[in-house]
Length: 170
Image (cartoon, one colour):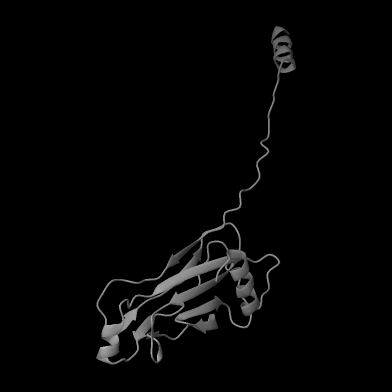
C-alpha cells in the first residue's frame, strides 16, 4: 500500500514546460560560377577549353544568364564559340555577348542544380599578325547573373531586360 501511495505522489508532482522558437527561414540568393579557364599563351587560330557553368547555391530557384566580354578586331569579336543548345543567344554588342539559360523560355535553375556548360571551347579568330600585335589585352571576362523567378517573365529577352533593370546593368 505504501508503494502505491508513493507512486501516486510522484506522478501527481510531475511538471513539464517547453518553448518553441519563432524562427523564419532566411532567404539566401547566391550562385557559383565555374568557367574552367586556365592560363596559357594563345595566338590567332588557337582554341582553348572553357566551360562556364552556374551552380545554384541558394534557397530559391533562379533564372540565370552568362555574359562574355572580349576584345574586338576590325572584323568583329576576337573569339568565337558554339553555345550549347540549353542556352539562348540574347545579344551581341561591342565585344559583349549575352546568353540566357533556356530555349524559347527561361529554364528555372532549382537550388542545388547546375546549368550545362555554355560552351566547351573558344577559338581566337584569324587576324593578321599586325592586328594581333596591336591588341593590348586579349583576355575575356565571363560574368554570371541571376534573378529570382517570382513575377518574372519566362521570355528570355524580357527576363534579361528585367535583370538589367534590377541590377542596374548598362
